[in-house]
Image 1 (cartoon, rainbow, N blue to C red):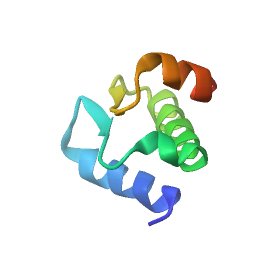
Image 2: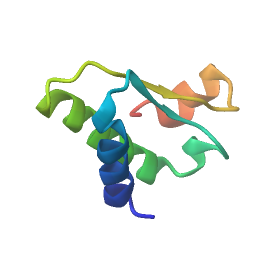
Image 3: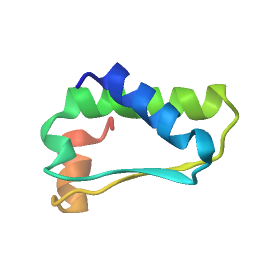
Image 4: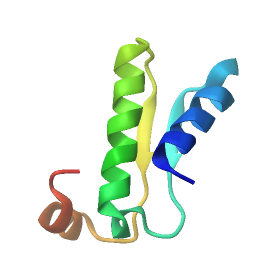
Length: 73
């Protein structure tokens, strides 16, 4: 599934109301380019539609590792 398809699915699924998006399963930070594209898309959607929802991303990596390797995310 492409990031665009996933974002479309999120919009369709959330049409009835929601309070957040959770990214988990596997290790999202093992695909940093796709994760960055997904986060950018979610933030653009949230900002562009004036929605107020949380974005959570679970990782098995310690915070210091994420800050070291993925600070831009």
